[in-house]
Length: 100
Image (cartoon, rainbow, N blue to C red):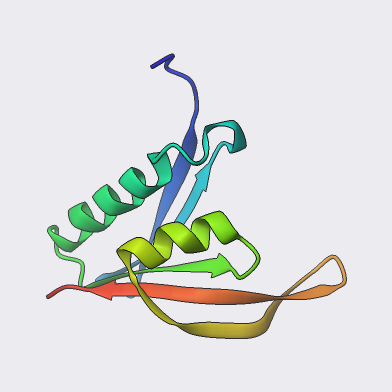
């Protein structure tokens, strides 16, 4: 309502007909439904415009993002210790939805 930055969604084209999403919402605006609406609308637009699948990787420790993704997409699994950042291995969860 104040025309301020609230977050972003980055859509990466992977192999032509598959999209991989990155989503971030400004911490002060989280838990207001913005991320859910943004993710839901992005999936809808991509699948209705020629994409066969949309997926997203979420750090396992990111409770809020995992909650949003579980509502909207199918949980496909976990990449254990797949990212090494600042001396620590982190797990990633994979979410994906395919065109019906």
